[in-house]
Length: 197
Image (cartoon, rainbow, N blue to C red; front, side, top):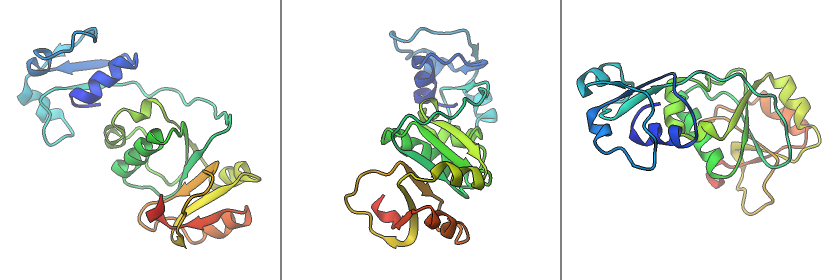
């Protein structure tokens, strides 16, 4: 995680980075309500050499990839993603899920790795609150049986005002596979237009 906002959010959520690099620029404006953890001082020039951002004058936190937690559905919506290959797009979808109170997300096996640094950065801290699981298509379909499911599709109908589904399947930029849709429709999924979501 990089940048002032991301690093402070990590620490406020109780996450302990494996390594923490902080610049004097960030330390000079460190908030008094956030305890300063063990860290290594770094110059802005050295930080920008290792940073994945175009500009980073604050710091960088290295995190351990946590063990995947078991999936437990206790009601509420679940976001199911298929074919999301861009890590920035995946991180954005994690952030949107968090914004709408969706605490669990299922990715099919052809989605990019959730722990990709660009996905983590784009999630802007939401990865701390949204549990992400990777399943095969068959496991996804079996789990969704009997649940009200909606598929986000460029050719679908405008969603309008409906009760929020328990599973919403989305790809990115028309990437939900046509071969995938009939299998979901057999489960009773209803396609709806992306622009309404």
